[in-house]
Length: 389
Image (cartoon, rainbow, N blue to C red; front, side, top):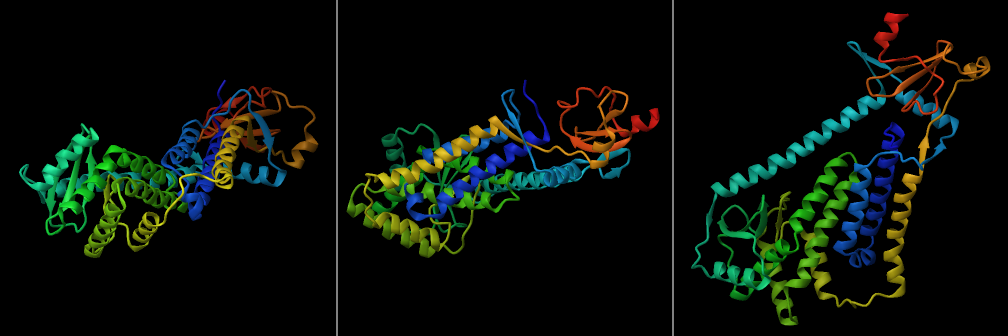
């Protein structure tokens, strides 16, 4: 039987945060970062998201009890300490409220930004004619890549760099009106933007963005999002040029567009060709100009597998073991000979936790009555308790 409690939620949060920390450590080091593929990033995302979506205690789970000082602090944290009207609230309830408020604000900003951007583009841009050479090149590349998605090419005066963005299942490529590129450079830019579409990079970016919204209070969420954006760009950059001559032309094109880009910006459901600042451009240049051996050394393989194995162990271990608080005051220990239905009762808090009382004295707050089967009197609220007593 599955059990949902404060301890199971806390364990899910700690586990996902530890895996997020391991992922951040990978992104901190250049060598491990360059050996890190999108598939591995997806695996880490799967571990983090699935653990957050399944914050339950399994029948095979074994409890590991906190030391008494920590158990005492947890019990204090979960116990109702504030009254608003007829409702009792704990510090945990207020933290949940603060997190939920921040989550809604961040999610609302994400949705409104995408909607505003789409409406702005549709009213301040012009569709490029099918007779235009850029559109002909786009159509040829769509056929070459066997992309069946709807892609439109728009001309705009409000951006200095090409941008690909998506609205539902429709894609748009924004092309700056005053961007003067050669035929070869136009082809390379279109390859770049279509590669993002072909590899579903905007979907990947949105998933990571939503994860960072869940972790709005944790700076690691924002850090992972920015590094993932760089990883997506590096992957696409490697697939655009098919020869050393094209690589040189692509780098020159990248530099030309970057020099015309005046500001850095981020679009949740879009990816700019050069929109992330000087630091990312330098890293993209270094990645394309440094010859990397596709064969991975034994040390490199170990460095790649070690964080994956460690994350899997933490993930599996979080279902086998769970951290639980257990605290009973000394005065109660000394006066209690045997827990019975006559000398004890429990009161359910608004948060779903239980306040345990023995001989009219508060003992602790628990998330489950699993270990208090002898208690028969369980009041649905303090209001009910006061009415009956």
